[in-house]
Image (tube, rainbow, N blue to C red; front, side, top):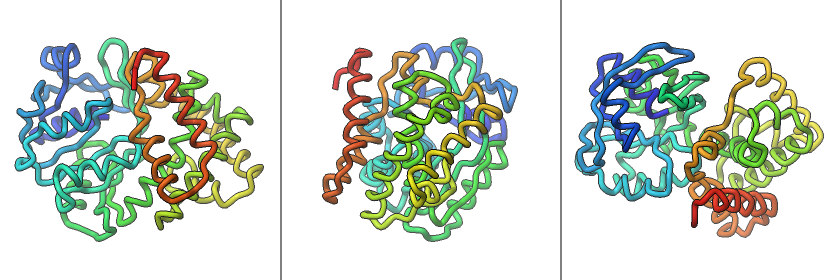
Length: 311
């Protein structure tokens, strides 16, 4: 997603610096960012290998990995006027507020998809919407202006005064799909259509909805799963809803794979602690029993460790 946003914004004439490392940085310096799929173009961008060299008014965080906090601490904070993250999970906003201040932090989430191909090209596979908004629910000119320029660049974006609710809704839908993707290692539609997998997604979503309720967050249907409807439905009806979505994915996006599965197949560490781990800690603090979430957290940690990523 970082490459997709950087390439589209640079093509639209904006000044863009992309933080990249190792072979990826060398390839972008040599060839530019090569986008395929929904868009077909190559775009040169400025590459920074050292986060201390980053300069700019807006920081968009799309970085994964255990060293995210270290990287963000290295960025000259006085240079950043607006910071937002399209990472998965909910801890991200706390991290940004702690480093850049609440007054410079926007909420954001990406209901879009992409995949890094083996040759370094980036497949832009789904362009539903990126949401940007103030975390306190206020309307703001800065959120509207930023959303407008990203949207005009070709990545569909809109503002929302309910961005925190949307972030929770996305996470509640994402969590079960992430767990099933790294456990089954198959395309998304295959486990969505499986009754046992769909049951796990539903049970986990209902647990997460209780955490959200405990924090005073209302879930919505504006997510990859209609999560508010799913959590309010009986288990049987919710399972049927998930399997129907699997049928839709089979028809519209048969090659779609969760980014967690892409990470696993590429030997990268899974983003467990800022996502499932963070939600589990929230449940403990609220005194909410979450056995399914606990089991999923244990499983994904084990999968990650057996791939050589010690915690």
